[in-house]
Image 1 (cartoon, rainbow, N blue to C red):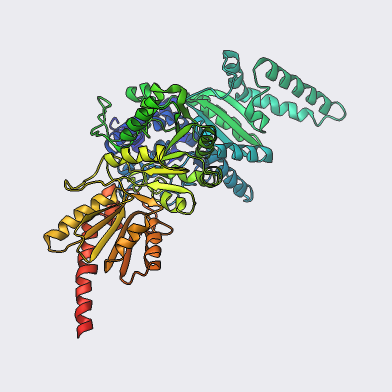
Image 2 (image 1 turned 45 degrees about the vertical axis):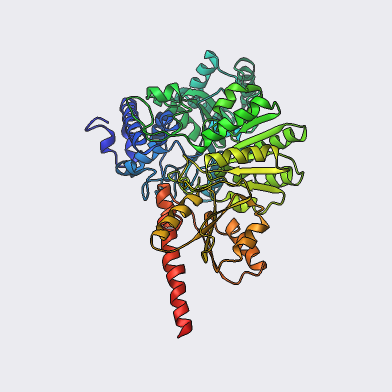
Length: 632
């Protein structure tokens, strides 16, 4: 950003109201520079944020925030909003521990009126806020900004339908950056849209409404004018079958989402309506940064990168890549294999599959509920569907997993990516809940690989050697530490370490790496520990429980929520089997806020340092002290 720019001197969004459109355009350029610099250093959502800069500037120049409320759908396009609302000096901390969130957050600023991290929630939330504002004497406007991608989620339509039928004031801005939602794309339709937000047109409408007051002839005359206008619009400008008009909205658009003058006129016109309004704007994802414009999908959510080349600063093979290779290998030899994604083909490693096997690749949009039931439909007729999904988004499909998949005993495979702590995306995206909610559903088998080799094995087992619903869950990123002398036995559980020890660590998945590192530290201090690694965590083997019975102290370390998780279930079965020793469960018992994964693991006592410390101080030395006390 240039020194002494407009942005340097903005302390509040209210200052935008006195700026010329030329100044607002310059401000937009400065915002883009800050966003690119910030994301290149911290990682984050780039293309989506660059696409809404002018729209954000226009909203804040027309509305009186925070009295007027803005709800950002998904929230991954709120960076410019944060910069303009008093967080300019803190933007360099975004997505870092104790720094700004990468999403709107109510506890962070009064300008963030609703927390959003998952898609398609904005209209429902904004309608609720709008109804609450209507109950106040001095209530403000409520604006929902929703991207066209979010309209692939069913919740968006539930909100649109409910708000549209209400007839109450609500402004919905459809940020269309990928496809045309409406058919009225001709030049005349665009011209008509511009005319409808001009002051002269709005003033003329006011005068026509005044004619209604003329006795006898006023109302029939104005009704005639209105019918002629509606007929002209419907027949010549493609508005007759407009979805949003059918739902009860005043529809404005489409408009150029990078034309501040036009945006301000549309927003001002929307304020004059006494009912729900939908403003349709076209934007370009990644606008202003060449690499993001050319490849918006890759620059949607990105790690730190070099601004000059657009290349990531570090890259390595990850679990998603291994999964992608695996399913391509299956599909090559088995035409029943289908791959499903909920708008996350790149993130889940399915981009290769989507190109090689187009006729068996299904991107259902941001509709995880539909994805599971769709997979069930495929399975019911002989296909082998594999649904790849982030853990945090799978939780939206609980009912479908239970009702449509498990109860029918249909064979679908769910590849749960980003299982466990994911770091900088914060509390809305942590993959720590799937084990607990899947644990409540009978008829589901869950595998937890700890390495690339194990992932490949369990994918094969899930697809070809498991009945009913099979889940394979694996973490974000690359393979973590595995001891050289560790041998995967392809059984439901694996034993590693000193079997003659009195202390047993029980764990699964990525946490096995931390347990192994902790054992090495403890061994150097003369403390022997054995590890029981669960490979199948639901249902876990009875033999694994019986093996644990011979130890005096069992410590379960779980990178997932404690309540309802695998550790609680294992402990229950252990005591039911007659265990007389000490059972200690360390798992996650609160929200996991943004930080490096390593930091979060440490904070919850799940990294090697904290595991070793707990066993040494609380178990080993604590046990010795208690023994001495008992003797005395």
